[in-house]
Amino acid sequence: MIGWRTRLGFLVPPGNPTVETEMIALAPKGVSLHFHRMTARGIGGSVDGQSERNQMMIDNLDSSIELLAMVEPDVIVLAHTATSYYLGREGESDLLARLEKSTGKRVITAFGSVLRALERLNVRRLALAPARARRALFEGDDIAG
Image (tube, rainbow, N blue to C red; front, side):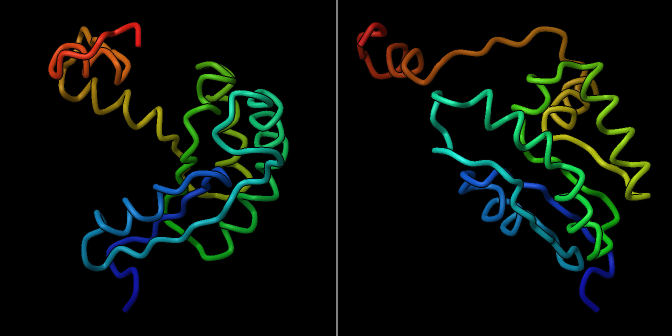
């Protein structure tokens, strides 16, 4: 039986090429995966218009999640980190509560999952650096270039 362990639903930004591929590769036997593209217009991944696209995805989440919920996933993942930092912690919490109430399903975010993993690993400090810094440190590139 498909999804005998669990059924996972993912709301994915329209320009994201990786969520489906990565989740399919990671899913164990018995887990079924279901994907739905969020609504946004414009050039995905472009800084130009990013705020407008974020708002458009948020404004259309209720209809997007309603359609995804029709396949009856056990958990729905909002696989769009920009929603988390765009709304902030409190706004994201309110959004998740509203979406859970409307679907009757547990709804989580990609960013929230990262936070829970860091908490579980007892990470207290974390350093992030852009890819060009890695190249400068390990490959001798000029960091300014």
